[in-house]
Image (cartoon, rainbow over all chains, first blue to last red; front, side):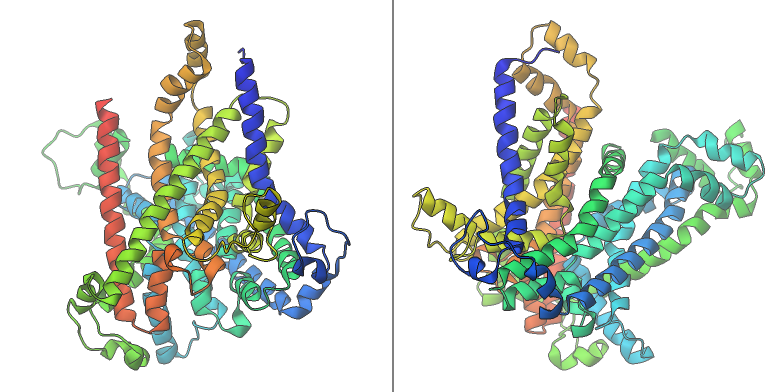
Amino acid sequence: MRESLSFKIVRAVGLAALTIFTLVPLYVMISTSIKPLGDVQNDFKWIPTTITFRPFVDIWSTVPLARYFINSVLVASISSIASVTLAVFAAYAISRYSFRGRELFRMTVLSTQMFPGILFLLPLYLIYVNIGQVTGIKLVGNLSGLIITYLTFTLPFSIWMLVGYFNSIPRGLDEAALVDGASPVRALLSIIVPAAKPGIVAVLIYSFMTSWSESLFASVLVDDSSRTLAVGLAEYSNYVGVYWNQVMAASIVVSIPVVVGFLLMQRYLVQGLTAGAVK
Amino acid sequence: MTSLSTAAQSGGLPPADEAAPPGPEKVRRRRRPLSSRALPYLLLAPALLFELLVHVIPMLTGVAISFLKLNAFYLRHWLQAPFAGFDNYAFSVNFNSAIGAGLLRSVGVTILFSVVVVSLSWLLGIFGATLLQRSFRGRAILRTIFLVPYALPVFASVIVWKFMLSQDTGMVNHVLSSLHLSDGKTFWLLGNNAFVSTAIVAVWRLWPFALLTLMAGMQSIPTDIYEAASVDGAGMWQQFRRLTLPMLKPVDQVLILVLFLWTFNDFNVPYTLFADSPPASADLVTIHIRQSSFITWNFGLGSAMSVLMLLFLLVVTVGYLFVTSRRTHDA
C-alpha cells in the first residue's frame, strides 16, 4: 500500500516524540546511578562528569537491600507459582467442560478485576490478626500473609488469561488422548500444558511482576525483617532521599529481572490479553 | 457463546426432567457417569477454595466491619466491637463534616484524575498504534522500547520521576530554566502542580498498555478492507475514521473500562510519590482511605468508605456497559 509523504512525516515526528517521552526517565535513571554523590546533589546535568560504579556497591550496605530482595523473590515466586497452578486446573475446566455455574464462575472471576485492593486490606489485616491470636500462626509481619494476599490479584487474572489460551488449542488434541484412554488430568498435563507452555510462562511472569511491584498490602502486612523491595525502596527514597544515585542504582537492580522477563514474553502476553479482552 | 451456555444448561439439568423428547445430545449426557460430571467441579475446587478465602470471605468481613464501631480500642478483639448501624456510612457521606468533606474532595480528585489519565493514555495509545500499524524499518525496536515503562516495577519508575520532579536537583526544572520557561524553582510535588505531575507519571506508565492492546486489536482487522477503501479513494485519515476506529470499538470498550478501574484503584503510583501525605490536589481515594483507617485506626469508617467506593465503581461499570453495549447494538 502507498503511504503519503505527509503520513511519513507525521509518523517520524510522532514516533520521535513518543520515544523521547519514554526514554528520558530511563536515561535519567541510568545516568544518575553512575554519578558520584556530589554531582547528584548539585544542579542536574545530562552528561555525567565523573563516572563511578560506587552506588551499585553502596546500596547493599546503606539499606538491607539483599534482605528486601530475597523477601521479594520469595513472595513473588511462591505466590505466582501457586496462582498459576490453581489457575491451570480451573481454566481447563472452564475451557473444556460445560457445567452448571460455569458462566457464573467466569463472570465472578472477571468482576474481581474491579474490586479495589483497599476493600480487602482492612478485612484481611483483621482476619490475619485474629488467626494469629487464635492459632498462633503469624500472618502479619511475615511473608506468608503477603503470599496468600497476592493471590487476590494474580489468581483471577491468571484464570482469565489461561482460558483464552486453552480455547485457542484445538479440542481435537486432548479429545484424542481421552479416546485413547488417558484420564482428563493426564490429558491436561501431557497435552494441554505443553501446548500452552508459552502462555503459562507469560501468565507466570505477569503474576510475578504484579507481586514484585505491589506496595499497598506490603506497606501494612510486613515488619522490618519481612519488608519487600516495593516498600523498602519507597522508604529509602523518602528518608535518605539525598542519595539519589544510590536510589537509582537500586531501582535498576530490582528492575532487571522483571523487565527482561517481560520483554521476552510480551508476544504471548499480547495474545492472551486479546483472547481475553475481545471475547 | 450462545451454544455454549445452552449446552451448559442442558448438561446441568437433572435426569428426571423428561418433558422434551431426548435429542442425541441429551442421551449422551445422561449416560455420563457421576464421576465425569463431578470432574469440572473437582478441577475448579482448589481455585474456588482460594477465591473464597482471599476474595469472598474478606469482602463479606469488610461489609460486616463497616457496621461496627471499630477503633484502636477494639482492635485486638474486633469481633467484640459494638454495632454501629449506619453510623460509619452517615459519617462518610456527611459532607458538612471534616470526614465527609475530605472523602468527597478525594473522590472528586480521583474521578478527575482517572478521566485525564485514561483519556491521555488512550490517545497516546491509538496514536502510537496507528503509527506502528504498517511495517517499516525499526518498528520492532520501537515497540519494545515503548513497552519498557509498563514492564518496570512501579516503585522503580515512579522514584525516577520523583527525582526528575524534585525542586533543586531535578531534571524538569533544569530543562525549564535552560529554555527560559521558568526560574527553575517550581515545586512540582506540592499544591496543584502535584495533580499534573502525578497524572503525567501515571500516563507514562499506563499508555504502553493501551498501545499493546490497540496494536493487537488492529492486527485482527482484515487488511483487504483497507485495500478496498483505498481503491475507492479514501485517504489515510478517512480510513482511520471510517474503518479503524469503528472496528476497534469492542476492544476500546473493554480497554477503557479496564484503564479506568486500574487508575481509580491505583495505590502504587501515589504512594511511591507521596507516601502517606499527598498534597490535597493529589489526595487519591485509595491513599485517603488507607490514611483514614491506619493512621487513626478507625477501621469501621475505612471499611464503610471502601464499600461506598466499590458501590460507586459498580454503578459506573454497569452504567458504562449499558450505554456502550446499547450504542453498539444501535449502530
